[in-house]
Length: 368
Image (cartoon, rainbow, N blue to C red):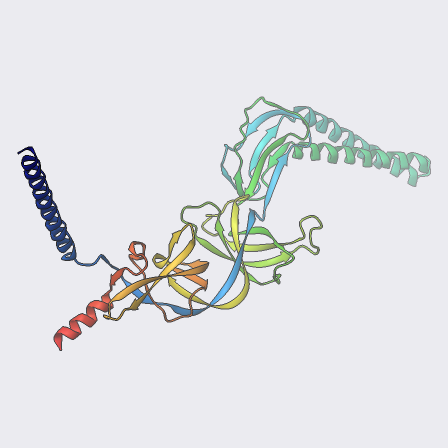
């Protein structure tokens, strides 16, 4: 009796397990069928063809902008300030008075020197008349003439000192942020301020390694402000070069002139200089066709499979310069490849892709 009960229990357990297994198998099959009913993963992109172009290959070096006219103004003679003719950062005109130093002592000495000159000239006239009458020696006339010359030289010296104690702008431009007050005492050769001329052009100095092709006078270069969020390029012309290569860096230094009529560029500003090297045949693609990962840069070529569906195939490329919204490709493409442009970041290898061209072919087939 016990054996029958055990056999019955075992049979019931096997039946329950088999039933549960069958139910689970049916559920899995249903899930597989449900998943198979979903369409294949895909992405929609815009597409274009790779275009071969003639591209001027460039290299980038660092340059520094230089104002054609810049000077640090100093005083030659000491004195206390009696007039301040500018404010920090002011635009000043040519010959504008910037500072005037106290000249009361020099003016007093100048008045005395003029009086001595007047007396010396009067004395010289008298002795010259007496010489004609042979009533005086030539030696006395010479001394009287020397006194006139000494007095004139003293007046010229004092006039020069008074003029140099008035500091004027040698050209129109913008002064620095220096600030002075009336009564302030300046020592000899104090640096008063820096004056930068506001010229319609500006210079850029840069150096090229001797291992690269060198420029000639009149060559064209481009610059862009370094570390700018929206670097605008400016064109310049090489106007001079250093007559020798630097012995330490083995680089040739050049100077180019840039149009700066709107004063966007500033003295001492660091810029990127794009130096032309050679004309090469390269490929051009839209910048949004480029995808990046830790393996490098890629574009996705679109190829049709056996069912005439477009599939994505990654191609590794070497990037060159960026020209507006186009990216130059130096290697990896041969030209004419059909590639994804806008939306390429969504793709992966062998993914089903829908493009505008695919839609056009489908509509055409449906119409037929």
